Amino acid sequence: MAIKQASFRKTVHRLMRSAMASLPRDAKFALYRRMIDCDPAPDGRLELKVANTQEELEACFKILHDAYVSSGFMKPTETGMRITMYHALPTTTTLCAKYDGKVVGTMSMIREGVFGFPMQAVFDLSEVRLRQGQIAEISALAVHKDYRKTGGAILFPLMKFMYEYCTEYFDTRHLVIAVNPDRIEMYESLLFFERIQEKTVDRYDFANGAPAIGATLDLPGAKDTFRRVYNARTDRKNLYKYFVTLKLPNIRLPRRKYFTTTDPVLTPSMLDYFFNQRSRVFDELDDRRRALLWSIYDQPEFRPVLPMVSAKHQSFSAMRRHQRFSLRCPAQIQLQDDEGKTVVLTVIELSLTGFQAQSKLKLPLNAHGVARVELGVDETATLDVTVVRQHVGEQGLFYGFRLEEADSAWRRCVSALETGQVAEDL
Image (cartoon, rainbow, N blue to C red; front, side, top):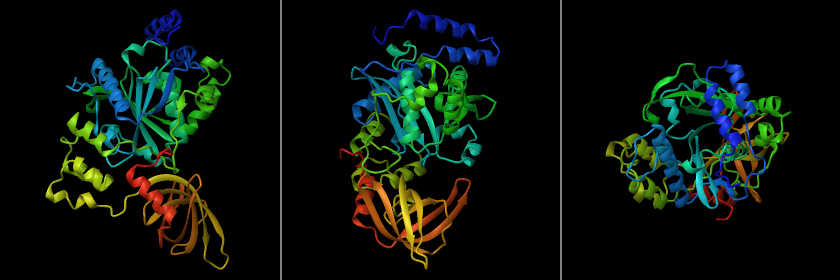
């Protein structure tokens, strides 16, 4: 049976949903979980990947536009695409589902970058920020209109891809979402999202003034909850097995040269095409955001396509002398003290002249040592470093290290990160 055909059972399920509106919350949520139908062996023609070409991104933006227009979340545009300023950031990753080579579904994951999160304009994320771990906003979820009535044949694989990408590749612990009140129960009942606040936001400008509810999910906690609630169920209703242990051959996780936590794909020509030619996103940015873009894309090849900054903000555009990059690299430092002890580190951010790392052991400030950092597979840097900063937080001990001199491996890595050449095949 073709993937686009909805079975009689799925039609019955949709009718049941409309009849459940008056049921008590617990009973309603239990029924939603009984209606789960996630295929552990999707059609081989289905492929899930990071959208990394102009054609794939354009198809994603068109599907998103059509879904948002039909739901009343935006007004139609001349280009038939929904493109936001967050799509211009290297900290945003867009996923796509393709069937028979055609993009049929999309979802974007926005790590906190220079513009913050879309939903922080109306939702207070301070409690989530206080918890351990990185945050990503799940946004721009849409399925092509021809594939929306397939009983989750596109949606469930796309969400599994998101879960796997966030937990294994995106260095993410907390997900946050802003969804229409009509759809929040799916996230609460099936995935155990918790509301950030009980009150519904009456007008969410990012969705054309539609009402919205904010919610969050702690991924390690969700794993335990999935095991408790779903693990005794059959394969097609077992979201623990589906999300956590099942490996789908349909999913193509990115192959990276280095242990990066994001997958920037935008070239200067793609930035120009989407944000200058096919939308007015760059034109509509204020000077502060324009300057922030200049601080991110500070390589010469990007300059011709970036929006101009007024004279009073030009100094702001060069706010950071050396660009920093998010990674997660195993490392160790051998201190040059009397004992010469070795301390295990996890490098979480680096630049040409230094890095930030997490340590389980306390390090003395101004201590010198030799650090070995595994930047990628078969790519290790050996560096003379000095401990220059310490930060003690809920997540543990963090230290800033200054490099006396970058070695060739470190310089190759920084150069690749600066130019976006981080895929393994580049």
